[in-house]
Amino acid sequence: MDYLRREGGVSVVERIVIFGATGDLTGRYLMPALAKLYEAGKLPGGIRITGVDRRGWEDDEAGFRRLVLDNLERHAGGVSASVREKMALEVVEYRRADVTDAESVISALGPLTGPILAYLALPPAVFAPTIEALKAADLPEGSRVAVEKPFGVDLESAQNLNRLLHEFLPESAIFRVDHFLAWQPFPTIMGLRFANGIFEPLWDRNFIDRVEIVWEETLALEGRAGYFDHAGAFKDLIQNHLLQLLCLTAMEAPTALHRRNLRDRKVDLLRAIRRLSPEEARLQTVRARYSAGKIGERSIPAYADEEGVDPDRGTETFAEVTLSIENLRWAGVPFVLRAGKALSGFRGEIAVHFKPVPHLAFQRADDPRPNVLRVGLEPNRVTLNLNVNGPYDPFDLEQIELGAALDPQEFFAAYEALFLDLLEGNTTLFVRADEAEEAWRVSEPILDAWEKGLVPLLEYPAGSNGPAEAPAEPEPSRSGAGREEPTPWAR
Image (cartoon, rainbow, N blue to C red; front, side):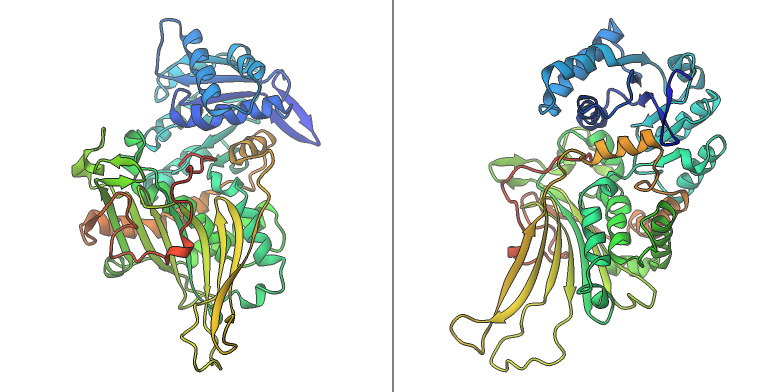
């Protein structure tokens, strides 16, 4: 087989086919990640990267190569100019095709002499017909299919996608992508929880008051109406990324960090999350979209007035849900998941709020602020807020912060790490079939309540802290206002 080699008994494909090759995800993240791996010598020798899309140029091959080179110059500045040119001029090729039509896809793939990695960087609406087309192409044994998030648009569509994929691929060859799992905070929260005798005995309802998992950003729509106006903040972030972080924060300890053990524990946790009734959804969720405002020096139009937005669709740019986990460890502890756009400052973190001491000996002190353990998502930083004696009166209290910035991922950012796992067939940091469906079982009642109008669509000015009905974290915890937004992944 020309496109197959063996490393330690693991087959590695040597041809990558990207469906949706002219899209933002491919240009901004996938191609730069592949270029970095190529420069580092981490891709198989003789690698071929085939881009497939509907877009056409007078000379398709030359047009696509120019597009790849432009995107690499814009988004892969750390890669040498010679490697960028070699990637664009020698490694990639282009095939124009209708990705939903089997004959068109088969023609684009051409003769298949060995296993391929088919990467679906596509909108969820076309996943099913593209997978049907791949099935008709009769992919060689050892081929793999990667599907970007969100995996479907509801429970039924996720179940249908799983059924279609399993008709011609084993689960070990299916990679449902959630790049948060390949990002540095993933091992950070695992290490804090399961490698420290300080925290493990305290990690339950007896000592923890509540947990917040938050992704708030200053970015507005930024030209992504085609995708975001159909997804919204909940499907874009909470249904996948933040639920994954919830799993890591609250799941039981795996016996080992093996793909099955780890994913079994995540599924157990998802199954323990209480599905909200319509009344609970009304009381425990918030949705809103931004109106016109200013973020720093930028004037932001109202979301409903952004180009490409259908205001009647009622898409939310801010979403907050409070979930309960019905098991012995977490009964009674609220888990707040919040995501929002066009806010006053960037905040991405897991914040674990501990309960106060049962008796406070400092009678003259005001109620002390709670101890909070924060795992910063970007930058990756761990802090712990503690109460100590005040500097002037030994019977007063003040709060201090102990913190450490963790070394950044030196080479393997999220998509680089994911591509290495894809090529080596390692499914540990990808979402399993039952896990994808359980995430929709949690999410669907919330989205149903929103669609029925049980939860009003609020508004908040761009550049504010969000809608008044969603209390903001105290100002000291909000960081990054005015600094460059993080960009190590697609949202």
